[in-house]
Every structure is written in structure tokens, then in C-alpha cells.
Image (cartoon, rainbow, N blue to C red):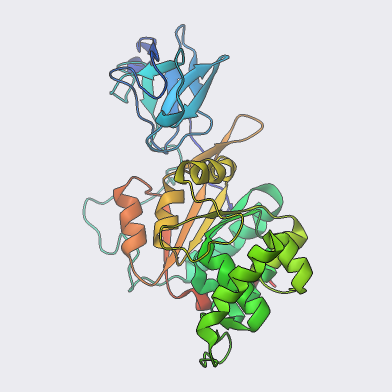
Length: 361
């Protein structure tokens, strides 16, 4: 079985699409203010008819953005970033009636059962994940060389020695091309490197250490004293862990702040728009995303990524999106927001990471 699903492009010779009018383009009259009847994007492949049978695909789509025509290409732009004079695609229909076509079935599997009624169509705590794991191993091996693997991590990954070691392995062995996280993941990973604790508990035995509740505050203070995470890792001789591995391997990481952050560490982006822009750099490139034990970051990044990437030869490939959590909430929330490609793994972070480490080692 091929790792990547084949893509079937729309048939633009079909009567409905052959007769489609050219899409309307309206200028932006003031920064951040969209023209009436603007078209909001999805994470599906979207095509815009420019006239004379020329259909142009939006190469880097995402949900809740708009299409701006620039230099003969469609740029997918967040509404807050539109500028006066930008030409925005308008129209609210999606089947060609206004020159806009949203293609939802391009990656449909041939021979798939399409019964109107069926049991167990969504991943739940009763779902067996054996095949999902096997498919994920194949995707990771493929995209290590031919894609862009993005991890979205919560602090639980750093609270356990084995899962932390496993994530370090992923970084060192090329299975991570970018990391999205918050202040907590970096703080507790550095705490583990410095004190062997996570929130004051030994990362292996889980035993509370004397005055261990100071440890995460102490590491934040020490990093602030050094001026940066990179300088602190060098100055304190922190040789293990996720962030240290990212620094050694020059893997970019984006730390987006939260209103409840301690510190935060230097390098944490407190401004939400700036954090979104920094994360969007990697969302544009992502071919596979693994979001692990972090509901808010999962939902945020899920709303940034497309369901596809346009390859160098013009063909399309799917973007894989795996959500690992103890409950169905994150996947259900994403599905309700339009991220229907999200594949759930309902398990704890430690078991998931150790499973990957053992099968990819």
C-alpha cells in the first residue's frame, strides 16, 4: 500500500465547471477590512476560475483565510493581514457558480464503503489502533526524507523519562523538522535536564523531591539570567532532552505564550498574532503533524494547516494530521471546526512515544 494517497483533480470539462464564470475580484479599501461577500477558505483544495478555462489552485490554504491574487498566484492571507489595494476573491458558493470550486473528494480512496449507515466510523476509546500505528510508522519513514514533520507538544511528554527520551530520539534521528509548543514544554524539559524532575517529581520514579516545586521556577530564573535558552543550555551543560536536541540539530521551535505562563522563558512569544505568524511559517510547509497531549495548541495548529500540499511537479499530496490524547475532545473539536482529516490515537503520551521509539529504532 502506498504511503501517499493518489489525488484525483476536478474535471474542469464537466458541464458545470466548463460553464463557470470568472471569479470576481474586489479591492480592499482599508487595511484589515475585507470587501463584502469575501470568500473564506477551507483546508480542502480550492480552485479559482480566472477566465478562459484557466483554473488556479490556492497552494497554501487554511481555514478562515481569504484569497488574494498577487502576481498571477493565489495567496492565502489571514484577514488581519490584508492591505489596502489587495484584490480579494469574492463569492460564497463553492461548486463553480461564482468561479470558485472547493474539491472535497480528491483524496477519496477507491473502493471505500459508502453505506449510509455503519458502526464505528469515528475513532473512540473502543477503536483498535494497530493499523493506525503501522500507517504512521510508514508515513514517518517517508516524510523523514521527503516531507516536513511538525510536532505539537504538551508538557506531559517531558514529565516521563521514557517519553522524553523517545522524543529526543525523534529529533536526533530526523523525525522532527519543527516543534510547536508552549512555555511549559520547554520549561519542564529544561527542568528535567537540570534537576531530573518535572514539576518537582522525579521523571522516572515520579517521587516528589524535597522543595521540588521550586525547580521549574529556578530553571526559568537561570535561563533568564543567561539571556536565552541556547546560552543557558551551553552554560549549564544541559546535554539531554527535547530542547537541547533541537538546539544541537538546528531544529526550529516556536514557543507560544499563555496567560498563565510562569516566567516565561526568553524566546516565548507572548503576542498571539506574532505567535500565529511564527507557527504559520511551519504550517505552510507541514506534510505530517503529530499533536500530542495539548488540546489548545492542537486546535490552534489544526486550524492553520491545509489538507494538502502542492508538490514540485504540480501534483497534490495529503497532509497527515495525528492527534494523540486521552480523550476524544481534541479530535471532535477539530472535526467540528473542519479538520476532518485528523486521525486520533486515544492513549497517553508516554505509551505513544515509547511505541514509536521501539518501532522506528
